[in-house]
Image 1 (cartoon, rainbow, N blue to C red):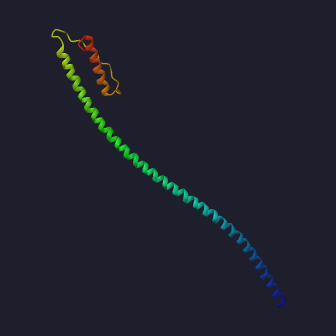
Image 2: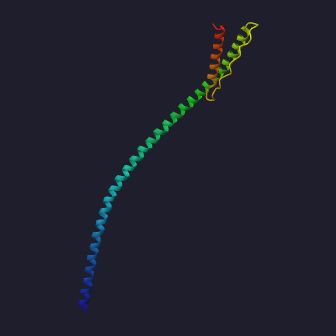
Length: 152
């Protein structure tokens, strides 16, 4: 019995060794695949790092562009506000000139002449600026003076 027990134990050990060898071969294949995936993963990470650097440079360029545009826009807004104030002053001066011209025209009439009835003012749409309205009034005034023969 001791002889058959020894053979059985050695057979069992041989089977277990064969299973261990088979399992080691399976692990070896898996490790090779893992190594190959590691190389692919390293390449992917490298591409991702490159893309990130490019994006960071692009963002820096965009920030610089936004800063330049913001400075330009601020300058243009200040210039536009300044010009708007100048136009307001000029329109005020134009109103004064038109008032003085109308006083001169009234004073230049002969004493017995009846004042010419002024045509009703044309309705001015809300979108027409006050400068256009002043120019239209001056044009109408000069046409009335030409009709009376008082204009040069």
